[in-house]
Structures are given as structure tokens and as C-alpha cells.
Image (cartoon, rainbow, N blue to C red; front, side, top):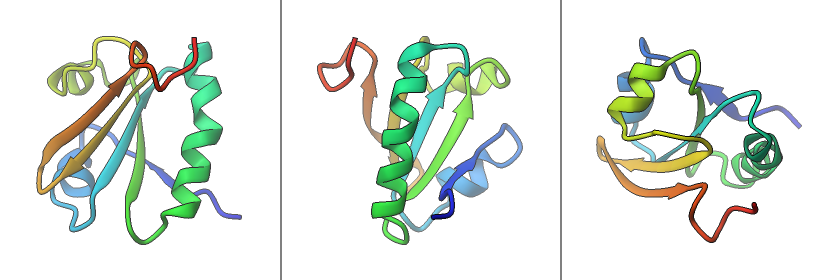
Length: 100
């Protein structure tokens, strides 16, 4: 199956996430972080299952630290759901949902 998780950057965050008609799940991650590596396949599965109903994007914490900071991402992994231009739900590594 095709990968349905897009990549979001500083330049396209507003258009892809904040101005999206669908709810948007953003996976803030770092390539070196083991918890992020463990979460990535799960995010991919969710993206395939909910394709067309929820938009899925990922943002690299190391490449876009200012954008991550603007969205209160201080460590990774963080999953945030945006709807109608605002964040509505955030799950952090310290939530009971994540392993480790």
C-alpha cells in the first residue's frame, strides 16, 4: 500500500494542517529517537485505515525546531490532532498511550 503520511514543513504547515478541511494528525518525531521509531509503523497503519477522513503528516523535530516549539513540542514523540485551524488533542511520550 502507498504511504499516506505526508511531510509537513515550516513552509507548508499552514496550508496542509491549519487550513485543511479534514481533521489533521501531526506526528512530531526525530529519526534518532527509539520511541519515534516504534510509533512510526502505527501512524502509517492509522493513515491507511483513516485515509480520506483524517489527514496525516509528520514533522521532523530536528529539522524544524522553531515550528515544533511554536506548537509546544518540547520532546518527541508527540501526536497532535488539529481541527479548524487549532490543536484539539495532544498525546506526548509521557501519556499512558505510548510505550516506554
